[in-house]
Length: 90
Image (cartoon, rainbow, N blue to C red; front, side, top):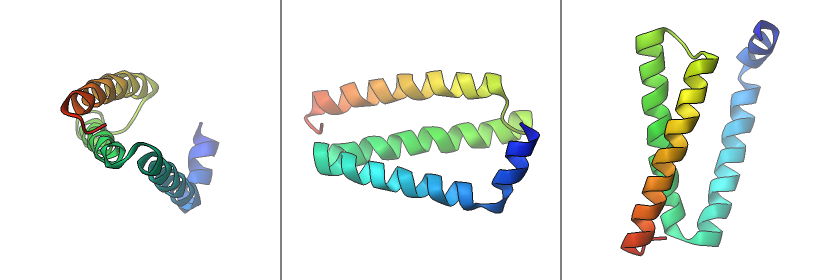
């Protein structure tokens, strides 16, 4: 894991991933409308909260925290999707 981590420190990986996220989010907005953009902002908020909490409370991200994050992220995404569908946004 350390060799992968050292290779990712150059920043290229981060730029490529952000580029893919923007392309995919743009496709979601094009296909599903502006509600998909709102849902993407909710998901971004969950990620930023998780990252801040993991750094503050644990000093970084572990595999267990990543698994916990994935479960919470999926649950909040589902709840937000259902809420937006109920409101007629999605």
